[in-house]
Image (cartoon, rainbow, N blue to C red; front, side, top):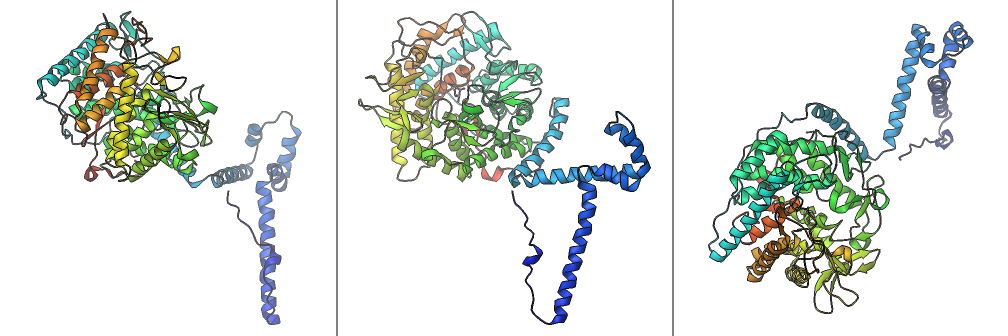
Length: 621
Ligand code: DMJ
């Protein structure tokens, strides 16, 4: 807080000039002292805690006596009994005090905070109107131009074409079963053939439909796409009393709707995406502006996961909003979305990073790190992915995103990347300076990320990033190859004499995750080394053999077991990501070409925003 210091009178330098000029100064000082005294006296009348009584005593003695002589007086009745003059004075005093209190509060805040308060007040007003209506009617007119490569063609290689057709059949099977047994629910239970809902979406419905829209379109399943679009139009409802994960709703619902819009040009998707984006804004009402993990869509009340260190928000959650929110600003004309995610960067920029690393936990109230745990897998992963993709999606204009990405990677390389005795490169978990030699399935997406970013790396590190991408792909492939079912465990270790193997029972499951295939897809695109298609095909076969059940595809509990035990969940990301990346692995490179599209972390393609098309948004919009 800034304090204004007043010079004491004695500090006024005395002039030892002529007696005349001395007298003049003296007169001036006396005048000043006198006026200060008068001001103080008056001020005291207005601001002393008991000033109402003092005032009434001075100005209307009789009424004061009357008031005091009654029993049980409260402030309302005493105001009612005041004369007109008193009431006016009372009102003036109240207003003064209010303004003074607000001014003091304001002075105690940083300029950034003041700005945030103003924006949040504006949003409350705008949001209240929106919450009443529940729909967005005033979207600006946007000319829809289909980005290049939205649709594909038959692969020229017949083997690839056949394999791709097989993957499309898998999608048809997964989709048909969802439609038959769980239409409108979030996910399908393929063994018990019924709907499934995790706590990520509360009572929000239709995760599989929204998550699958773009896969249906990409695979040219247009009838199914139309049915899904119809459901979105008539049933997708955000006016529900649901506590949801902001991150999951953003990557699956907002991301899914945005992609569906960019691929098809259907206005309903743009409108729904913006509606949902507005619903998510109250999550940012924290002292730092770093959003809560959980938000009640109806009340706008947010909170963090109860298990998170010291009430913290999670790096991979608040750090994985950027791509979608930038597109929301573009499509709605409202700067607020982009401002929210840019503010997260500002908060992070102000913080010291241990060894240059980003801890997984950040308290949104104090804007301080929680536990110093660092991971490029669960809790951290897509934060790094979004730094890189923010730069790529901005047509390489977002230099800050690029710098943050390569700086973060430098710290990860120095502190967390290791090579096993058997020559497998892995990324360990960092806990307060100590390494846990474990790599999660989630961490396997980094092969693709290293490959995607290599071209922009500082010239002396480019080769290393290309190498790291291939080495991580190999390690993750080993984690699959060393299991009985040829599917990868949730986490694998490099200690106690094992390499790329899960040693704990609770790390042996496979829930149809996409990260390893995602990495194969990127490496295929950049190298055309046939082993990546071959490795992808191994996964297709294992999925068909061990995960396919009568009512869809299911995860398995233990990839080392002789026979699969099914977990009875067909995750929505299986349709959104796993099958989409497999399909693209066997497609031509000009289908969703990487120079025109970036995939959000749920594999929803978003077009690069060309510099010349970057909207100039007014900060108050
Ligand atoms: C997906 O929802 C996203 O890829 C997310 O970033 C992490 N995990 C799942 C799939 O494994």
